[in-house]
Amino acid sequence: MRERFNQWVRANDWNMYGILASIFLIWRIGVVGNWSIECWVLLCVCLMGVRKDQIDVDWKRFFIFGIPLLGVFYYFYGTGNGFWWDIANWMFEKNRHLLQWDNFMKSIPLNSAGWARTFKSPLMDQIMGWIYNYGFVLSLWICIVRSFWTKSIKKMMSYALSGHLLQFPLILPFYNLILLREVWWVKGQPDLLHRNFATENELLVNVMNCFPSMHTSISFAMLLLALREKDKIFKYMMVTYCASIIFSTMYLQIHWVLDVIAGMAFAYGVVKLADLIIRLASNLVPSRFKGFYNAKQKAYAKDTVAA
Image 1 (tube, one colour):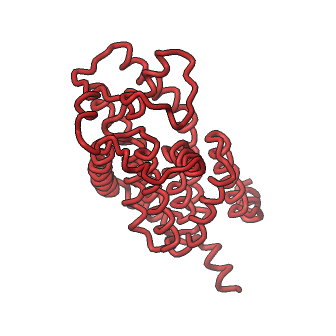
Image 2 (cartoon, helix red, strand yellow; image 1 turned 45 degrees about the horizontal axis):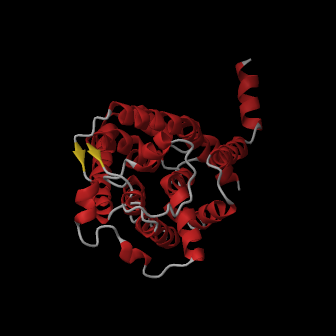
């Protein structure tokens, strides 16, 4: 029986099964995120030079750990949005904001970032709207998906921890303490994102959490990590895209300049914290696990020699 099982295992192309499962999972991530064609194009461009950053791990061994990990991230992505808004509503209803900064931020010269709209047009509004609307999660997913194809569990965890996994819990105390609404709302201007709010409560919940800017902190964390990669195409694309996300928050009159600065400082701290966690966790991983993950399969070696 055992011999038959081993023969069946050897007779199947597990690399192909893993690739197909990975593509399906990535497609599902895009479906849940309602990705536009531009999102997929951006992802494809960022994957063009992925081999330059791949590590020497057998695909079959990587898929054993990589696919379940990507599946866990996908699961929390699908459920996390509702959880986040439950927390936001709870904070609004409990009214725990000890500091109210609307007037303070409005009084600081140039802090409203009106200068960011020196050159504006309907087309620019549309482009910046697309960048802002997708930027909160797309910048992170591009990095996680790319790190998956580099066959690096460590990079997947680095991007995930530096993104929402650590930033959500660490930023909540700021949002619970500080009430600061979006620039357009405080200044009595139209919402350039043209959002429709069913109730006044929904409007206030959406515009109240500004300091620090999490659009900025997520994208800046991804930018910092992308600079560590070897592939220049990926680095240039992510620097451009992430910088555009940060600029869009000011162009669209959503975040104050100090929100953006605070978001960048917050992101830097989270990236360093994620590095520390991964370094400490790596020391706790059993050597047997590391050996299995990094070792080449004997069958693969034999096939290479035979070829």
